[in-house]
Length: 277
Picture 1 (cartoon, rainbow, N blue to C red):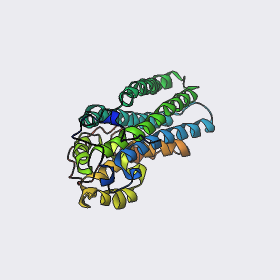
Picture 2: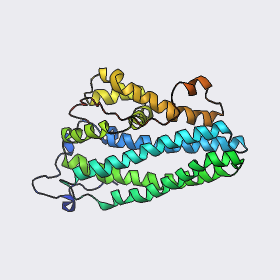
Picture 3: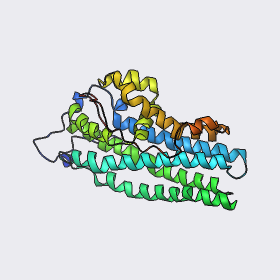
Picture 4: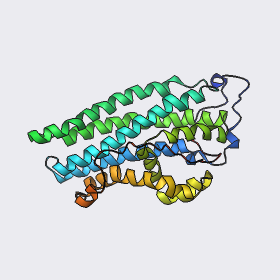
């Protein structure tokens, strides 16, 4: 259930009352913070489905499957660390200038990071275990860990939406959240913005999100298209290969570096007065 934003326990100063909710020109479902969370949910679901498909095919992971698992996971790992850093280092301190922000929303990140690191250690071991011919059982182990991770992440995201998102829209006007969002986007890796775009659908992003937030159409070719392309290469295609059992064509693999794209979205356009995280 959404937080009662009028509860005075959240109000830090009488100078900033929680009276801004009606100023937001779009539903919470279209809020960028919600959409960012949707991309995280979808990535986790996609990875679980991909490993389940691999498991059904039977046998230990093949070499190409190891490469796909590693690439997709490392992309997600980078995304989540960036997302948490954005919240902990930029968004939360900004919200705390007006809100007595619930401590639990930030504290939960520590447990999530511990689980992330546990899965990352398994993925890191895949190369060595492949050389040793000892990959049997790892698919089930990763699936078990991913399901536990999903069980931790989904309630956390919902809690942030019910509390943090609701409070942000009550205490801040859209253009005020837009200012901090521009800084967040500028310092984020392209794969994070790419996930944001691809997971809501390119048509919806261009014709819905960009128009709602007064983002000039030229920004698609100038900035966002490349983010979507990077995410597709580093996450979508490896996951689809695992789901279908069809290897990525060699020429596609050779089209770019096998290193995960950590390039920042450093030339963020002016995303308009109604943008939000």
